[in-house]
Length: 245
Image (cartoon, rainbow, N blue to C red; front, side):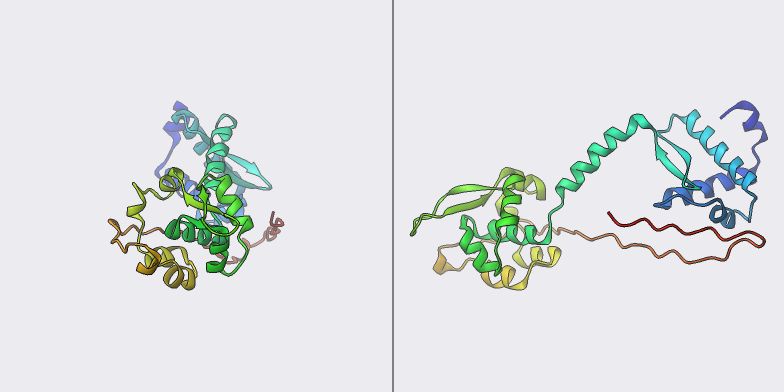
């Protein structure tokens, strides 16, 4: 921050800067200056701009990777251009890690019944699994493990090393109990507790898993923003709603 501005900073301005930074950090969309003003003691637009300018100077001096920009009649924290490519690459990888519920249920059947045929998977799930199975193959979470010794010699499917990496497992012995997997991922009861359990008649040994890993996947809840009255003497800002992609 410049020397002159540092000398002029008061405790009040510093508090306003910290509050504004917190608001912008928590907001998923640009904040109109009126909304910022309400939290800072009903400041004028010029005073809000002063706070924004002071914050941007702080970020510049500190070598931060973001700045506050005016977007759609509001203010928003934005990455510097030279940082966007790296972040987009990271977010793409995060999106690729996610599986649909159908994918998770299909993967659960394969993990606990492998090697297993497509027909057996569909019998357990009660629906066709062409889509989820192809996705799992493309993601290299499952692979073709041979052919079954039955009429038609259908393909057998099993999990891969990438499957272990995806769930943070050392080996298949560390798979959690079927009940735990079903509870964490909301896998259908029929698949998890009735059909997936290998019985002695099927030639499966009931082994106690060595770990009790808890896998948690929760969708973020959208916060409901309460409506507040406009500042006296000013027109209320027009709310803009973008269409969902």
